[in-house]
Length: 167
Image (cartoon, rainbow, N blue to C red; front, side):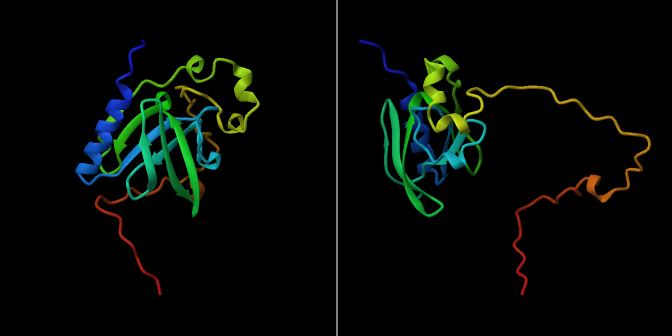
């Protein structure tokens, strides 16, 4: 009998820690053909989901899948996420939590053509994030640099955001 991974137990433990301390648990998930999420919210093949008690209904965290219902844009959706596709669980308020190794492309889909025929293919541009360098554009000497489009934003002052009411 194959040994069960520790990952689902760790996910449940961090979820419980978040809720016990009044934090909002979120999970980051790699999207593939076995992941059922609203595709319009998938960015770079990943989605972050709020799995707090207030945001979900019928949350069930099994050893293989995390299933729940949640509202997206006012519409209730059934969400199903394979535990192996969860790459992080953390508290929104302070970022504390745990990250996991991202599944390799072979783990996510054994057959690359299997994913190509699904609606997921349009949203999944890459299964694993990649790091690449971006060349720095050299400043042209004929450019006066006085264009307001190229001015950097002034630094924001620290502290909490403030809502300004305009009548």
